[in-house]
Amino acid sequence: MTFNATEIVNGGGNIDADPLFVGGPTGTWTQNAAYDAKTFQSTLTDAKATWEPGQLKGKLLQPDTEGKLQYAIVANGANSVTIWGKCAAPLNGKTYRINDCHLQANSPCIDAGAKLAGVTNDLDGAPRPVDGNKDGNALPDIGAFEYAAPNAAAGK
Ligand SMILES: [Ca+2]
Image (cartoon, rainbow, N blue to C red):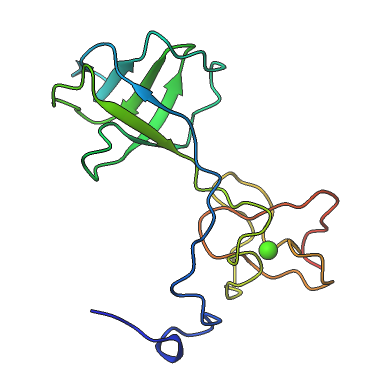
């Protein structure tokens, strides 16, 4: 099924542009995932990674770039990441990608969304809408995260 711009209410026609997500680190697993049936979480290890503990929480993990599955990241250490769910596939030696769906400063999704009554925060809990393109009109961004330009004012 496909849609055209007029079929997406208040979509501003932004239906086929690259959203310009921030993206994230990639690497190669050095072990298979370890699943904890008590917490329903899996921990994956890249012994060569040097992440700041906690920096990946809330981002999405694509544990095998040959596949499309993604998992929500619960926590991370310097070279391990914990995700929701059972990741049973053999991953040792597979390439992963961590996806950060925050918007880059030049994303066409900034201030391109529709205002929704009662929506005052994004997935991070940050205020929304914010005037991300600094045109004096605070509009919501398309997507889960509101772009916050330096010195942007909320709810203007
Ligand atoms: Ca905005």
